Picture 1 (cartoon, rainbow, N blue to C red):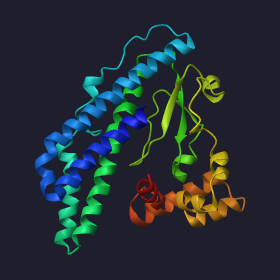
Picture 2: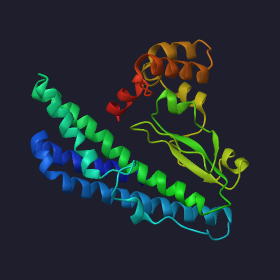
Picture 3: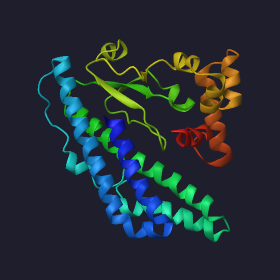
Length: 263
């Protein structure tokens, strides 16, 4: 339901972009921000309900504090006004036009940026609500990270790992991985509570489930070739990420942009 909520918000915002274009979109930022804020509120409410269900599942005592969804919705993940963040898509398109790009290219690039921004801000509201809720439930000592496939190599190597409740949930733009809070590490790693079939907790099983073309797409061709040849998946992906950070100052592997476009 959470993933569907994010998809619906993205679709609603892109419909406005298609109707107005980069120029007219700037006049719709207040309405667009309202749509995104509504999506954030729904995601936060879903997260609060999810944590309540987990509390019952594990037979825990009532939480000492619960998330307040309205306090989470309406601002960006870094605290800025939503209108300012969403306006970046139009700025990107116009910057490309000023640099000589044709309209179709600039429009497509702006729409891609908008998709990434809306999906990230909507999804993060749910992640934040879950993290806040774990603070108020001392019996939830940590969480296990799961893949919502398809996923890039950088996320894949984190699948099934257990983190303490106060460890941040790191996400790159476009990441839709999830964390399942647990009463203790053994519960999390044994698969309790049950999760959907499309959520994966085994990096190697995920890699092996992909076709060669998909492995190359999500992990990078050189990296996937090395892994198929027996190279350690964690070391291969981490080495590639470190090299890209040193060479370009970016921490996002190239496969992630391809993944966002594909989803």
